[in-house]
Amino acid sequence: MKKILVTFVMLGAIFLLTLSSAQANSFSFGDTQKFWPGFSNGVLTPNIDGTIDDLTDAIGTPNVSGGTGIIDNGYLTSVTINSNSTNELATSSLFIDADSNGYWDYVIQGAAHTVYGLTGFDSSILSNYILSSYNGSTGTHFRENHPYQAVISTNNIGLGYAEYSVDTTTRDLTISLNADLIFLGDAQNFIIAWTPECANDVIYEHASVPEPTQMLLLGTALIGLAGIGRKKFFKK
Ligand SMILES: [Ca+2]
Ligand SMILES: [Ca+2]
Ligand SMILES: [Ca+2]
Image (cartoon, rainbow, N blue to C red; front, side, top):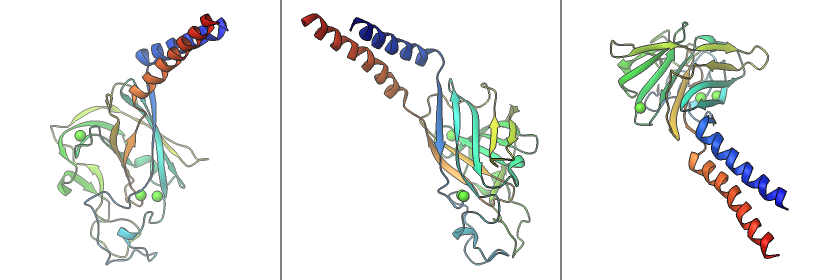
């Protein structure tokens, strides 16, 4: 019996220690949006496959379905985009709004996969973006005039580079970062947005990570359980 009590206390203590030292949280997101809020194209001009931009999630390939990521001690270290095709993944862009206030705080973009810290970057302003290519043409096979990259001004700071890896078997894209580039802090609900160059299928999602307080309660509960068990043990 005593062994079990000790195990509970040890488990709880280890859990709490792990939380306070190195905290890695995973998060996931879906693909619920056809276009980023505020960037609709109307429904007048069909693509060559007959699809209408605003009514279609994926125009041709890739068709992505959300993904997962890892936050290590407050820093974003990994994002995986689940895709059905390797098309355009290597040159896609990722935007992060760390505090969900409508201003992008970071972007990873370009063939160089440069990570920029953004200042005063209103996510709703069209002129802040480079738009998906073949601007203005009709009858084409992609989502026209959709944000694809950020226009980088002198206020925006190049922080470093991310590593893009496209898995040819699973057709997923994994973006890896050093744990000193994109700081999310204890952000529990941030916006993650992703787009390939032709904006065939875009992602714009609120990503959620487990609350540290919930994890803390679990650790405390384990120790508490041990305490209750101990009382019962000594009554007998
Ligand atoms: Ca999709
Ligand atoms: Ca923000
Ligand atoms: Ca989508």
